[in-house]
Image (tube, rainbow, N blue to C red):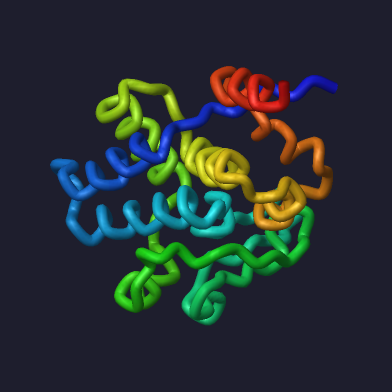
Length: 182
């Protein structure tokens, strides 16, 4: 089965988007701080939107929103999200105690999704979704040389082939690498 390549934004684009949140007009500052924290958690921690704000499944079970007690010094412990499996992800370095005390976030997933999509179009002139931020996290891990099985674990992928979509080759690096071998 062929998997579509995910939409990726560069680290620079992520930073531009992240910094633009506070400059957004007509949204209360408290709400902007929550949006900014959610964006940080997805882009620098690899969290899914449902792991941040929670989600009630059709079968009645639910994914609990991220709370203070899930945050550790260097990691975040996620309980039973997709596939009902627990996982541990890195706590973003910029997630200070003030940010931890904002949890659980009181934002609606559709509002958060809409905010990121609108901001991406306005600031980056790209059609992105909240999930694009998670793709950004995985892609940058793989491109910085992290082993694929580590990225698989951090992303919570059951199948390594799902994680493999982040192995999109950089033609310049491939050419340099091939030249170095011969």
